Amino acid sequence: MISTIAFVLLCISCIIQIVFLLRERKVKDFFSHYLLLAAAILLFINIIDRSIRIKFLAITNTFESLIFFSAVITLVLFIYRLKIRKNIIPFIIFGGTIIAIILLAIASSPIAPKEVLPPVPALQSYWLILHVTFSFIGEAFFVVSFIAAIYYLATKDGEKKKNIDRIIYTSIVIGYPIFTAGALIFGAIWAEAAWGNYWSWDPKETWAFITWLIYTAYLHTRFVRKLRGKISAILAIIGFAAMIFTFFGVNYLLPGLHSYL
Image (tube, rainbow, N blue to C red; front, side):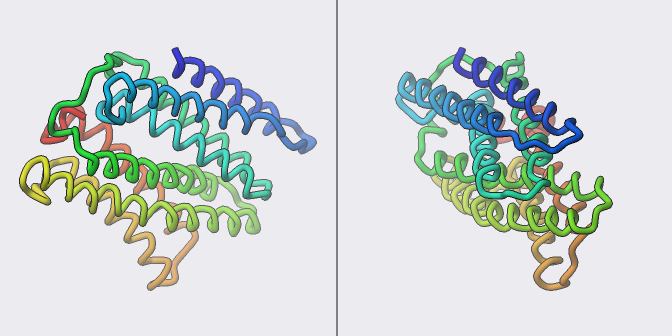
């Protein structure tokens, strides 16, 4: 019920954003981003409620992961809306809102069971909490970079391109170390505690590593090769595609040690 209310708030926010984006005379939207904040708070409340009932942080199955991921995305979008005053940000916020809505729609579908059940013993680890939370926080910034990259490729305005490129870059610079800590470092420590090996080339581990390599390539082209623009935008999009496949594709197409997540 709580997640449903959050979904409705996101849809209302999205409609308001569309109205303001389509207006010929640019008028600032002072309301929709507060709906994003309200939705994020409700989603976190949902996580807290489930956590109390299972006596462990509720991020150990697909439904809970989608709720948490959506909550972090909407919170990150709210922060971007407050901190960045450029006229390009409404389009990026709109794109991010669409992704959060899609994730919540998937969470409400049959592929994400909603039963409130305690996690299996292998998941009852605080290393898992660090692994999952840090991974999704980093990926929330990758969502911003993905939307910005699409906007970059779609616009022809040179000045806008510079500002969008900056957002792509800063989002990945923020998300990359957080994702690295969560997906690789904390994930490896948890794997050793749960399965006795730091790395077993499980499909999800492999695709998380591929995702990390793509974003590493992005940073390499920026720092070492001094490349930016279209190449950077394409790498940001490819990285997002790999990230999504790591979560959904691996879960349903390549079962492995993470198949219960």
